[in-house]
Length: 316
Image 1: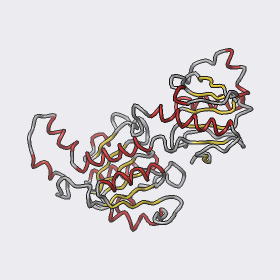
Image 2: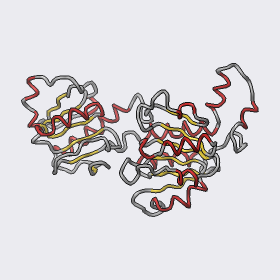
Image 3: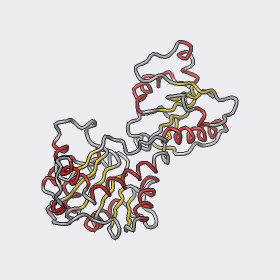
Image 4: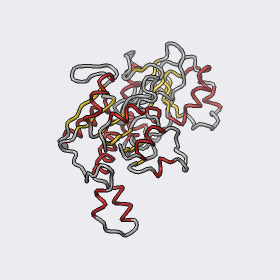
């Protein structure tokens, strides 16, 4: 069984593998394949797809005649090229739960405690506690305890986010594409949005979620509520969001935008009540170790003839 993976520096984190498994490092996008590796393309069973290899996979797919599994190290797979029939697509669900949940909590605390606002005064050497009442609703810094947090997308990351907010004393509710006990479907959003102090987006990028946060969605949100996007930029109509934040009806913390990178001249950078980070919610100094530990479990499953975890449909 031949496994291609994007780096080999952390192979020790994979753990012991069966003797029949061979690991081969894949060059970064734009680099040539070594001659001794190129002849083995047709023997690859398991391809580990890092974001920088997306172009390389599309180029190689016609030659990957033995391919059985494509594995991403991300939760979202909307960027993966369409795969031939019979090839399994597996995502990295679970790898980034902790870092993304911590990012959501961090930016929510920062915005509810109005830290970006105060930091702008600190940068000018100004001590002005009256600035706490600058937002149009006239409400000062807010507590997480006693607030209602609505999570749109109650997958593994959504559950991790909910646990952390609950520990702070928040009332957590969530919706999911596939309703289950205690978690309604997206059709519940019109009733839930007006009661939420914080709305967290963690849904996947699909045709159904494209432009989910539109003018109507934002109009239903509580005055002064915070929108937190830890998912994909395509979920949000950015023109509608820009209108809403300029009118100081809502605030926003965004880790994903459309387009990415967000151009320097984009008005969202200067819009009131907006905090933007450059798609780093899942980043941490330990994520690659977790990724390779998970990868080792997956490879052992496939080598044993078992179904791997986290099988996804193309685009979901």
